[in-house]
Image 1 (cartoon, rainbow, N blue to C red):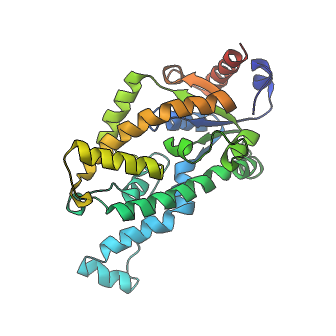
Image 2 (image 1 turned 135 degrees about the vertical axis):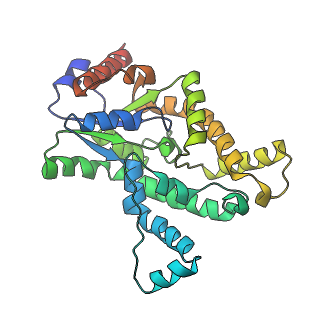
Length: 288
C-alpha cells in the first residue's frame, strides 16, 4: 500500500500499518501505545502462540507434567487443567516450546526435534500473517476500530520471498496495510543481543541457515557431537548471527514494498497523532 503524498496518507479515513524489524526494536512498544489511542493491535506472535501453536505448547507442558508421578495421576483423571497464559507482552510459552538445540541435560532439544518445531512455527507464522486482512475487517465490524496496527515477529523476513511479488504473505500485507520498517543502528543491535541473553524471544531460522550456523558454531568451539552443544551459548550466538543476516533483507523488503523509520525516532512517539506524522514523514522521504 503506497500513497501519492504524506497528505493523502494523513487524510485517509482509516489507517492500517504493518510494522516489521528485528525482535526488540520497538514494534510491540509502539503497538501497545497505539492500542491506548483507539488502534486495534494485532500481534502475529500472539496469534501464532494461541490459534496455531497453542495445542503444541500445552501438550508440551503436559508431557513434562506426566514425568512427575503426582501430576501424572491427576492429569490422567482430569483432576487438573494445564494451560498457556501467553500474552502480547509475554511470549515465554512460545519461546519455551521452540526451545534451543543442544545438550538435553542443559535444557536443550535434539536438533531433529528443534527442526520439527521450527517447521511448525514457519507454517503458523505464514498463516498468522495471512490473517491480517481478516482481522482488519473484524476490528472494524466487530469492535469499531478504524485504525489497525499489525505487530509482526522478527522472523517475518524468513517466511517471505522478497523477489516474488506474488508471494502470498507479501500480497496479503501490501494489499491491506502500509509496510513500515523500524530500522535500528549497530548500537541498537548490540543492545538487542544483550537483552536477548537475558530474556530469549521466539526464534525462527531458515533451515539452510540453521544448519550452516550450527556447523560453524561446533567448528569454532571444537564441539564434535550435536548432543554436546551448549544450548544457551548457541542461542545467543545464533541470535546475533541471525540479526546481522536479516538486516539487509529487512532493508530490501522496505525498499520494494514499504517505508522506513528509525528506531530512535519511533521511540519518541507519544500518541497516535505523532505516529501518523512519523509515517507521513517516511512517505515524504520515499517520494524524494
